[in-house]
Length: 373
View 1: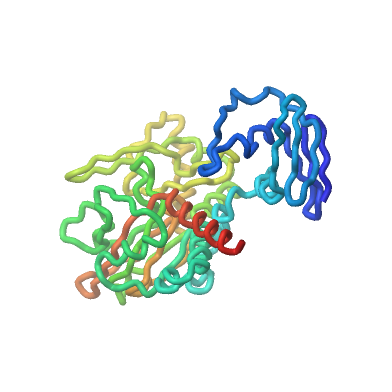
View 2 (view 1 turned 45 degrees about the vertical axis):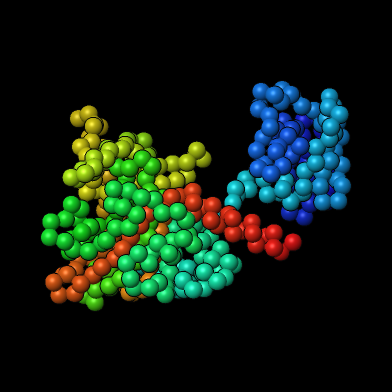
């Protein structure tokens, strides 16, 4: 390991290659200017020197000591911390994504995380692995959940915070006589994401099978990130149009009226697919000029036809006593039709806040790392 510096830059060279850090970035991230317990900054960017200059840098064991030209106090940086925060490094392991396109060729038990509730409750490492795969693949399964109403809430205490909506903390997915939502009917449902008319959109969704139908009612899932990237490659103009056009989503019932606007495909600052919002049942009238309509509907139809392709769809009947958790801003879900008169079908569902699921994984990772020291 070698450390060198110029007034404007620190360079670290080792077996994993070269890392470079600007002096201004280093000065802004000096641990000495953070509150020790919370890690929050004690100074603002306006308090920093405009062009801090490195006087010298030296390796001291597993950390780097930096002295500044116009300051008497040195700064210390752990090599491990610098390696983790270098340019291009993933912010957190649980935030990396593994896209899957050919869903029909996959097996839910073999290709995705599937663990028992008792194991996740008793073994922190198993729960961290399950949560990490939930983030990476967008979907994970849990077995051994008691077949009783409300059991989903006990299970989700291991995953994140439940988000209460107008449906309550828990909602029942079963056929009723006069449904306010088509989910509460026997109809098959095409692939969609839930509640794009909310702000914010629910981050994760869980569905617990209390009574699985033996005839019909299979659950369908597809990776919206992978399908959107497929569209980007095969039809870049259509992809660009779906990322740049705001779509109005509207939902109304006896006790609520919800409205929000967002594109069908949402991009991150880096131009990567960050969210998919598709719910044909709640898309309101698009506000397009006559000249814009044909081009947008061509892109819209192209995306909709991709979502109907059976090859992209993971299909399974979730057995009674098992549940699925999936990223509601990535994984599209649907179901085949069934007859509740012949075969009852009852799922309970809930939504979870996105940040709480991320926090649960990060806190587990921290606890296990501290126990290992």
